[in-house]
Image 1 (spheres, rainbow, N blue to C red):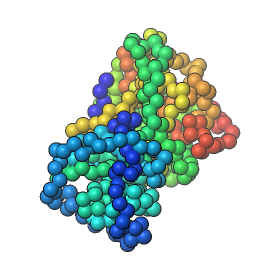
Image 2 (tube, helix red, strand yellow):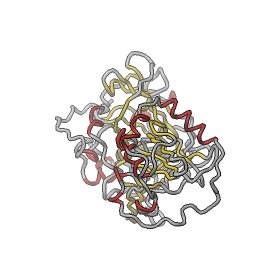
Image 3 (cartoon, helix red, strand yellow):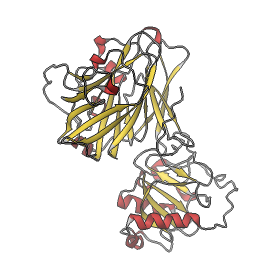
Image 4 (tube, rainbow, N blue to C red):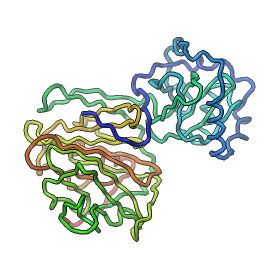
Length: 416
């Protein structure tokens, strides 16, 4: 199945396939530009820096863009690279990263090492470097989506990020589905503890009439009340959504949101934060969102697949059962990842507490980290089968309990 989510265009780095590069072979000299000398440029407003970078990309260049400028790349020890930045490969030839510019400029850093040091000093997660003109642009991508662009002159930019070079786990999974099934997930750095400040709660509903299909009446959405203090979450679906039993939509155990989908259907859903009193959008700086119980019926019927994009990271169990695949994107659609079931499940193995997942429950869940967004979109597909299947979701989970430990009593069981 090919998912093409029409959001902002972007391409993911070819992670896990990056060629090692010696730090000594990408920079020949650190003379003429010290880290201290670069500090004066760090406070320039981002809007001016972005305009400057755009102008720079539109200038003529004498560089031979058709030359094989990566032909001399050789192995490097990753531990040598300052600040954890790694070279991103797999971009279109001559591309630059179109992520948000937060520092740097022309004549900024004489070497990639100095550019990395400046990036680390201001908390940039990515940067691009061009030796000609000592060009160093410090950037914030906040995800594996480097947003490669070939607008303007094509130049042999060296692009580095903390999101490139992630370890990739490729393992065959036992499954009752036809053909070999493999997980192919990326190992992201653990979220920082400040993500724990925003724990989404699913304890009450204001609207329960997704696409006007019930079980309630009124606004044709699901609206979860106070998922954060003073903030509601509104869920809308496209015309592809059909429930098996709409009566199952709503709140489960005062810990999960739940949406029932008819087998043989697929849909994209938007999740939007708004002020609890009204419709005013709210931007949340950082939070975790988990999809639980990704499984299927007998003989791989009603197989569940989740599609995600625009995340900063995702986290699965080391022994996950999920079949994970990343689409690097293309013209008109963003990079995305899919997570499909590989095992049969029943109601008896459904999770009852997101922070106390059993081993089986943890293997069938995925937690996403999102940053600085008002809304996000996810795709869901339930394969051919009989009846419907429940999509369960929530906030924190035991997949990230080492970052956000919780020790709270179970909420009273109360179905919506």
